[in-house]
Image 1: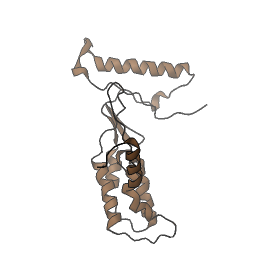
Image 2: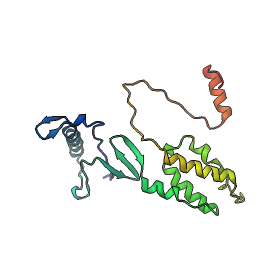
Image 3: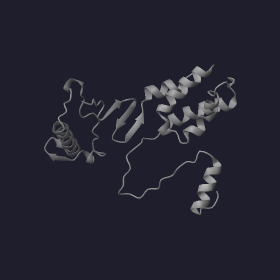
Image 4: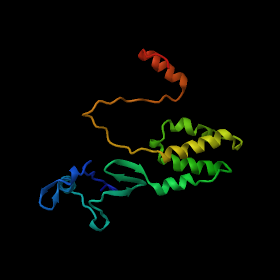
Length: 186
């Protein structure tokens, strides 16, 4: 039997201005309980079980596998971000590898992560001499800054129009893509 851990049931995005649907019962609480009931029924129909003493229900915010989850979306866990922000300057490849390893966990909040971290990745190449220079220092500072200003990640609302933007790894690739799409160069 497969083992599942850290299953989350998202609550409503709004509190509906604390509107009550019955005396003492707020609409958003009732909506969340209805969603919970559906999920628990699905679990039961699948023949699965849950551990009551390991379960948490109806929190406004909680930490789940290194992310803080709330009605606004998913955010980096500030305890882990603080660890990254106070990370000392690496003195060898192992230190760089450890720093990148922690940052990779939160890369979804860092636009162009691979490009920003490239000066650090260069230090990890086989037989590469370890030289910590301004380029590496700048890359490390950019990664830290990106995590300090990370927005919440939310699910796509397909009822609203949206535009997907893809970041090309190399500038030359971006130029070729823009030409094929008939877009002018900026």
